[in-house]
Length: 285
Ligand code: ATR
Image 1 (cartoon, rainbow, N blue to C red):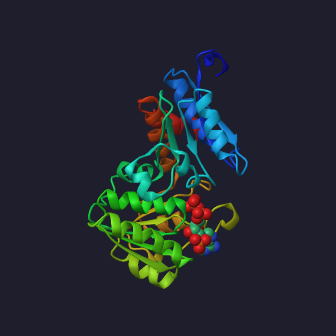
Image 2 (cartoon, protein in one colour):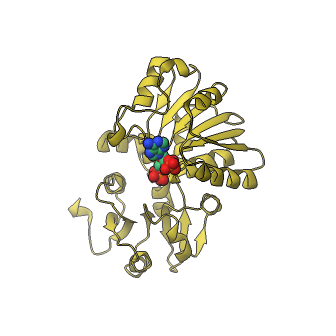
Image 3 (tube, rainbow, N blue to C red):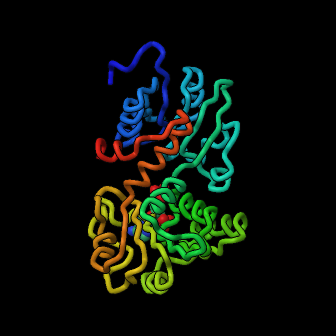
């Protein structure tokens, strides 16, 4: 990789904290190298209170853009010049483009990345009902984007009901074709709502390393075979929820393609080029 960096190479920066675990530098640099593009992607761990200076630094150093991750996805909004319409409604930013005139535009590619991976799996979701577990940043982007893209009904379950309510209020206000409902996390109720749903999405952290072996539902008998099950977790590759989905005979996907697609859409924002997603999947994972 060193050979491709020259005096004219420009920067794309990830701002967040923590960032050392991030897969984005590997994904983006592999794609930049494959396409012979003269940018380098670097991750920067930004201290609390230093976001504005970090963004200014990217601008001053001629960076073409960047990614924004936890805990700055909302805070960044006040420092941007323009925001895409989806990102404004979602209320969080994960991608920025720094234009030649210095103006900075913010985007959110998380929800679009998820929708892309559903489409890749040929999942029919237009006019259908989707059940989402969780109401964090990822759930918000996914639920809102699905509503924009034609889902008929969204039901969001969350341990903290207030957070789910905030998301559904935004959807019900902004997308008249989608009916959104918030419910407190409860397995019996969740199972009832899944019965006539097309897709179940886990956006909680249940099933990640700290809670490996746990899932939002406890047995395959509770999953109708025709529900597509999506978990946004990609490590472990197959969560307990996805094992249950497999046992139930459901089609399912983990969060890997969402991760790659959100990066691919950001890559396109910076470079106007399509990321070679199959190459990334084979080389980076
Ligand atoms: P992200 O930004 O990746 O979506 P997050 O904002 O930390 O992550 O959201 C994590 C989600 O997992 C939240 O919906 C959280 O529920 P709360 O809003 O009630 O905190 C959910 N979650 C995490 N651990 C959970 C648990 N043990 N039981 C139920 N929900 C859990």
